[in-house]
Length: 512
Ligand code: XMP
Image 1 (cartoon, protein in one colour):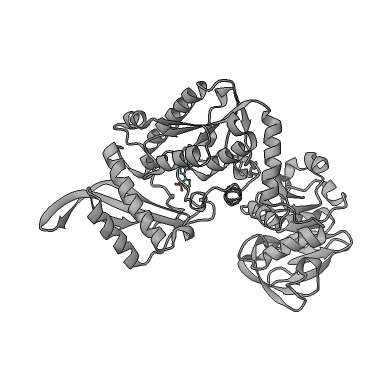
Image 2 (cartoon, rainbow, N blue to C red):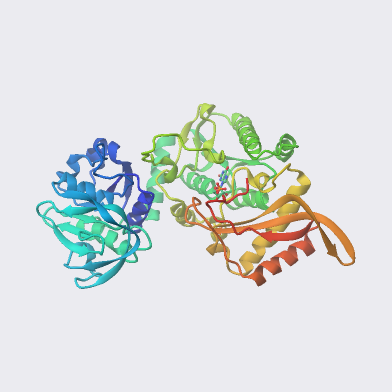
């Protein structure tokens, strides 16, 4: 397996994705915590990520020196290349020619990293993002690629199996980057391609059995993919020692609560406590208009209700959670200050620390799309596994202003029509998330010969890789008109439909 030292690049996780796509297990560790795990982890190769710092700074982050004396291959990317060069005796200078974005790499020599797809004399598109550049190489290194702004854009030391790239092979804008990383882990490091979801699943099942023993485990279900995958995996591992608790907030999409109950009770035969708490949630939300106040109320009630149900389960020893790898990775921060809270997130993952239960978190090593693959491996239906993300506070944050049962019902109907049309058009899987928002604005319309005075509905659809940034989906006009017509004709209470074309940033995906 491969160890990735994180120097704070925005795209370090993508390096891990590419390594795993090549069938090799890897972990990410902050550069300053790496020393301690080098021995236990015993990597077959090390990758140094990019990062925002400059090696010319006094307190510039460095890789532990042992990284270069362990006898394993090292691949330095961008900042990782620069610190490697400097630590091994070369020179890095602040460049007067900064390069950001697409660039072209001229291959001047052959190299193991490029075997099979890049050849000396060739020219390849790569993605650059750097201010500093290598000015002279340490002993034993040779140049294998150059670009306009970086004469040492790709370098190699064949004897030590150290490689450095000024560009980012992990991003899709370097079209052959994926193969380059695959070459590093297979051809250079000698790792076998044996990391597969089937193997992961079997290993996890054994691990869960060993961890849990005869104890009873509680799992909170939200209807989302992560908690569902956890539940099915645990059920495979420990059968009836598992009890699921599903808190129905009354703020789910159309038919969703029933789907969850059917899937888990009928299809999987997993013991499931279904607590319909919609009156409680809607009651406490009555008259509340502030978005953060709504989020806090829902988060608090969710924990209260979950705990009440969990307390009824005799001899529970463990709580299962769908924590994912991105939540676990300690991010490397150079700014130091606390970041601003845009929204206080709530999900099943944030359940009570005071519950006195030990945690089972079988998805801790996985990325979101790997969870989907595992879900399919476990036999969860495709349409379930491929669902768009849904926020913990549910429809409450898609009804700006005060939430009522009547408004939630109107929104559910309109949302269902919108999603049905998107599915019929074959667009569902190309969209990260699509949903409707019921606005607290009424406008005048005319239907038949009568005047109407009803709500405005906003439609939202975005593409995104991870929810951190997003673009509005470019539906064609005819499609949007068709959806608007259906909604206005079929849903009483709405007489106008608009489409939200804001990207994130500056907007967020949800409206509250
Ligand atoms: P925003 O609106 O912040 O949303 O751009 C980014 C992604 O997060 C989802 N989201 C939530 N998910 N609990 C969740 O589990 C929450 O409280 C929550 N708020 C937003 C949102 O749907 C989008 O996918």
